[in-house]
Image (cartoon, rainbow, N blue to C red; front, side):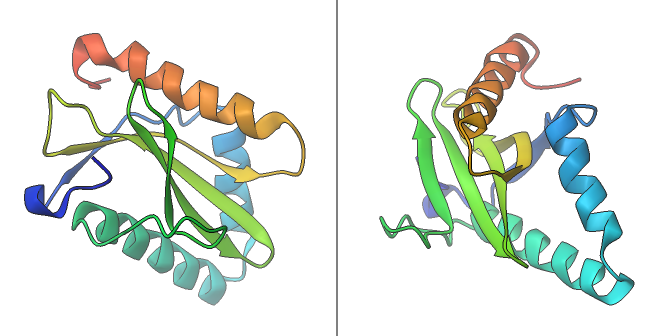
Length: 137
């Protein structure tokens, strides 16, 4: 679906495991920034999420694309943001049974090792784990 603009505005449904070590690491890194930098970055992240919900993001097919499909079953996407050499990744699903929803599944700081695939698989597993309850905790 890739944040279908014809369905906008889409609604974010939070289903992130806030206790996952990678989520905690990203949150901790944000908290470590100086107040102005932290508020600015939190605003930029919010703008990225709002652009996704408005259907304004397109996959440009290159390394700088702000959104990229990462999984086909379930249909899941990666939102990308780079700041201070940190590559932030936000994963969400777009379930066919909830066409006006973007399900936030996972977030982390991308590292230069094989852990990226592990993070993607964790996001896909979150999708499947939440499906029976329609991603309500």
